[in-house]
Amino acid sequence: MSKKILILPGDGIGPEIVAEAVKLIERLRADFGLNVELEHGLIGGSAYDAKRHPLPEDTLRLAQAADAVLLGAVGGHKWESLPIALRPEKGLLGLRAGLTLFSNLRPAILYPQLAAASTLKSEIVAGLDIMIVRELTGGIYFGQPRGIRTLDNGERQGFNTLVYSESEIERIGRSAFNIAMKRNKRLCSVDKANVLECTELWREIMTGLAKDYPEVELTHMYVDNAAMQLVRAPKQFDVMVTTNMFGDILSDCAAMLTGSIGMLPSASLDAKGKGMYEPIHGSAPDIAGKGIANPLATILSVAMMLRYTLNEQALAQRVERAVNKVLDQGLRTADIHTAGCEKVGTARIGDAVCAAL
Ligand code: IPM
Ligand code: MG
Picture 1 (tube, rainbow, N blue to C red):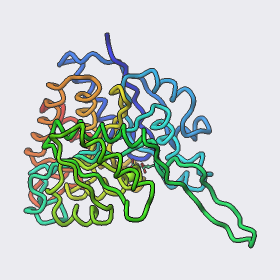
Picture 2 (picture 1 turned 120 degrees about the horizontal axis):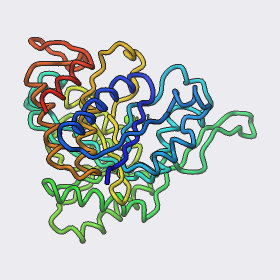
Picture 3 (picture 1 turned 90 degrees about the vertical axis):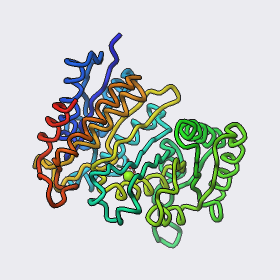
Picture 4 (picture 1 turned 90 degrees about the horizontal axis):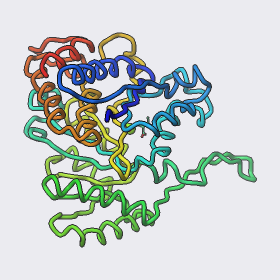
């Protein structure tokens, strides 16, 4: 039976990069027997413009019925003055919560061809291969109460709540331990247990889980130190597991080690392996519509979709090898361009990946 993929291009460069990923999926269908059906929907600011809501009901319904979702990016200056509940980002957060996509996998892999594009010395980053497992449906992003209130003295006060239940910590913990088992069996749990009770509980639960995974070496690190270690000696990490907000921050930091955030895909999975796949970069409104954005993070997100939801390991590898070939050919978008390489646009990279399959 064919699997359903919902395509949500979103805002900014979203439509341009997703078009290249769709081109790739069509090619996999035509030439490699991939059995999928594509559907299309609106999300983010473009959904707000058309339907007055960043996550229209029919988009959520289509996403719930689909086997996988491929998303471009959401957000842009145009919608920044909307009330927070109607901002494009709420569309994305609503999908994550509405589909219970609690486990967010953000690999940071350095392609050897791009070592010179990293701002760090190449010996520090050569061979880098980290997996950040970010909790995605809890923590301070979703905690109640939240808001901006006016105190008795007339001053306004903003507040958010960092909250994790034991079961939420346990399920993201198991997800991370299972991933560590398939890799180098080293897991670093990142928290702020010296200050925040919530992450004191986080550390306690992670420590308890370790008994079920005796082969995995579990370590703990405070988030400030983890940020420092990521730029000091990133290769000490194999798998990192952390809260929603710490994961948001550390994954951008890890991305830059690899040369460009334009290279990094992500998978957001529920308990059954259904997933939403998206590049970790944003909508980049400053370069939208120019045809110069890097589509490789989205293309590599398709590879993750093949691997984690569609169970097409061989095709996933084929896509990743094709990306490698294109980098070998010296084709680069502006974000990863270095001397001696050919600077090309979005569509040219997409075509080259299809040709290299
Ligand atoms: C990410 C993004 C989102 C997040 C924004 C767009 C809501 O930064 O996926 O990392 O903060 O989770
Ligand atoms: Mg982020």
